Length: 310
Image (cartoon, rainbow, N blue to C red; front, side, top):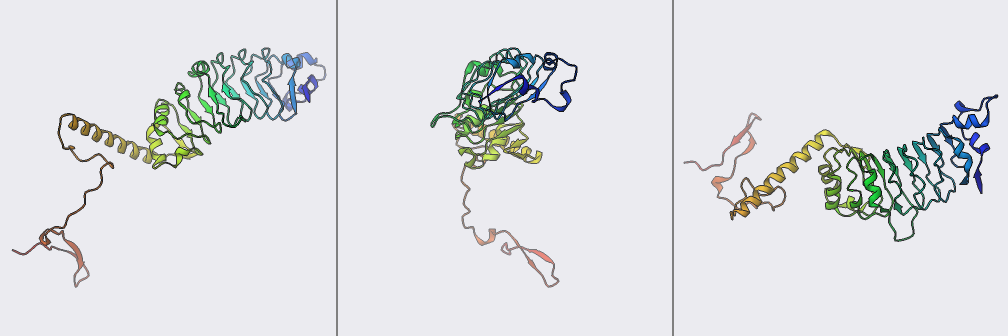
């Protein structure tokens, strides 16, 4: 059982912000901007942290906190690291309106909530929550709408998710880490990420849908601007080829639908790409067999026609 004290705070600073010999403790704490309090077995954050009024970055990961501490006196915080504690609920963050990065991975949180006032939040890392068996991470709609315009990075890996429809409103995401979940629906995936026009990195490894045919190709087509999928870069050549193939397929699909509406039994320029079985070749008369190549006496290749002589 360790409570955060002034002495512990003073020992949690870098070498660049050591207390000067003639400096008062109050003045020293007030000018601190970074605190490194990770892995100290801290289970309680008292009032002493309120003296650090200019704190911008706080490292409290790998401790034993049961709840997010009250930080209303630390309103300059922009980055808060709380991974690998025993936190069960997202709370006490409303005063931190300048917060841009929030790290909550490895806790016991079951609902993303309580972020309504964080209109500047750019990164939310809430991966690998330790939840009761059979439960999955839930998303509070009000919270999701509140952070939808600012959030750029979302890490929801390893949270037993079988759907990501609740994050559909996050249209400004640059990176989405949803690996090691239970996602199976490719149509839902296409619907959700198809509207994320700024998305350039997507991680889905460890989901059942990764085992579906042409998984990687299909995802590249869904996410028009993606550069990295499951940790592997996508070449411009591959992207262009797949998008051209998809566009051609859609054109032929529309033509087929139009012909069917008109009552025509024809498909226009051909069957829908890769959707109709190949036509089998029937035996033809010998005089219609195409020519083939064979060597002559001078070791040059000539084309020998097998058409019947007239």
